[in-house]
Amino acid sequence: MCGRMETVAYCYNRNRLEVAEMAHSRQSDQEVYFYCPECHVGVVPARSRKNNYFFRALSGHLHQKNCSFYKERIEGSGHYSPQEHSSAEPERLPPTILGAIATQHRIGKPSPRDLPQLIRQAKEAPLVVEGSFEQVVEAWNTMSRDKKRLTSLTINGTQGTYEDRFEFIGDTTKNANDFNWEDKIIYGKTCLAKGNREGVYFLDSIRKFDVGEEKRKVLNIIIREEYSKQKQKKYIRNLLNDGEKRSDAFTLFIHGCRPEYNYERKKIGLSLPDNSTYKGVCVRANKRAQR
Image (cartoon, rainbow, N blue to C red):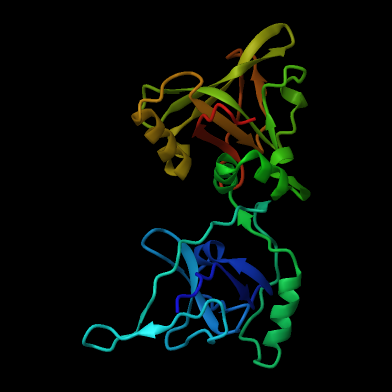
C-alpha cells in the first residue's frame, strides 16, 4: 500500500497546522513537536532529494493502517531492512501571508489525552502558510488568472487575493506616490544591466513618471554588492548569463520601498532594505501574458 506524502502536520508548540517547508526551515536546537492530523502519530519535517518537503513518521513508528499517509513497509534485499514505497510529488502550497506569524510558543509535549482535541480545534482554523517576498512572487508568477482570484494573500494585516494584492505599474493615471508600495506588491517591465563592478546591477523601469518640473523619469534601482549576498542577486546573475538582454524581457516586483526623487542625480530611486526577506525587489523573466 502506498500512502500520500504528508505535507501538513499539527505543531503542538505553535498550536496550529503547519506546512512541511515552513516547519523544516525553522528546525533548531529547541524541541518542536509535530503530529499527524489524522492518526496523531509523531512526525518530523524532512526534505527529499528533489527538494520536496514533507513530514515522515518518527523512527520506529508507523501511521495507522486507516490513515491516508500509511505506507506499508517491505523487506530490504537480503537484510530485512524496512523501506517505504515512494509517493507522488506533493503540490507546493502557495503562501497565504507575506511575513511571519506571531504565535505563542508552548514548551514540552502534549498529553495523549489532550492531543485529539487540540488537533481537532486546529483543523477547524484556516491553514495559514507564511511566505517570504521571494516565495510570494514565485507563487504569483506560476499561478493562472483564475487561481490568483481564488487564492488568499494577506499583506500587513490586509486580507485579499493574489489578484488584488499585486498591482501593475503601467497605470498611467497614477504617479509614483499614488501607488501603495507598503501594502501591495507593485510590478512592471524593467531593463536589467550589469554594472562595471562585480556584484552591481542596474534596473530601470519601462514606465516613466512625472516629477514636478522634471518630466518623464524612469524608476532607477541600483543593486549593490551588499544586496548580492542574498538569493535574489544569484537569480539576477543567472538571468543575464542566460542571455536575456531585451528591455522587456524582465518583470520587476517592488514591496515595502517607496520611491523618492533624487534632485542631485535627477532620478527616482529606491533605498533597498538590509534584510530582503519580506520586502525589497525581485526580478523574474517576463511573462508577456501576465497582468
